[in-house]
Image (cartoon, rainbow, N blue to C red; front, side, top):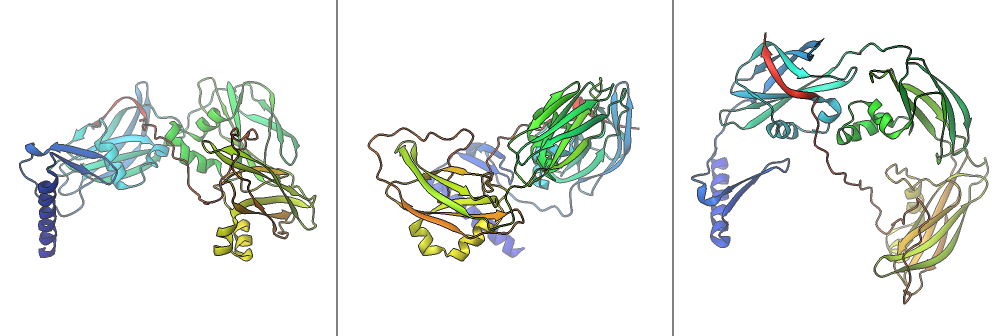
Length: 438
């Protein structure tokens, strides 16, 4: 306790000193989720501390779901812990709840929502006002409040809404017409009850991962919503070809059908493997240095072409500044680096000739490297080519990039993800929910 009081006193002294030096007139408090609350310094009477023992939360016991003409009802019990004065509660899709990755985030979300406060326990209550999508996972979240009205502990319970009976025959039959190294062609025939269907391709095992990552951002309630939004859509018999696939790769074609009421049928998943390139011999690469161009405003670029032999199935290509390579790298380290998988880089695995546009500096020495695998996954020798970029041209247009192939930067290799703006989380309700004791 003495140590805690000493820390608090030193903090207050520090704050007082800061006020004396800068004379601020605002006091801002920011929580761990980045939410801030501000006060006019002249209106603050005092800043003080307290300690409340025990966890402040509202525990959930889920009983089940009932459906009726006025919507769906979730039956549950809520029990406040000792010291929990009130709680707030909400229900949202599990995909959206999964975006709230910590108790702090759940508490902040509920605290900033329009959810009602409840000041009592419920041994057998109904949450009304919800219209749940059949066969979809949802999450009930509560946040407990202490005697000061502070949002404290968060509790969560997941459940799945029951399936709804389909109208008519909503089956989908299919035929895999052709599979090459880079194309998959499939014909679909829907059942008589299918009002529509969609199909989308994913590398095997990644569809659920993508839904978990994007479902909340795009407001998708189900994996079927994602397939419908991003995939090939039709209502009758049709054929679709997926192009630009990677050779020798396992894919899954997800097919989602729905009836006249928009109710989804069970997902159909079609496994397909594209044909592999190359042979069983030594996979070798040839590197050719091409044109240089650009300008000081838009940046400079260098074309490097990596050409595989007929035994190559897949190859990986980079350039690196010669000075940096000679001071920090070895051939063994470069080979190990290129052999390491990098799923975050869509251009890491190359198939066929790779005409790469690299961002470079003028009058700088570089080394281009490439290594290839044969059809058996055996690595060939490391290929390399040293070159020096020309002096900056007096006037040159920006890089004329090959369609669909942006310039790539290898001087500083990162695995960073692109930041996507957050879309506000949507509730699983059309009207404000109410918690009613029975």
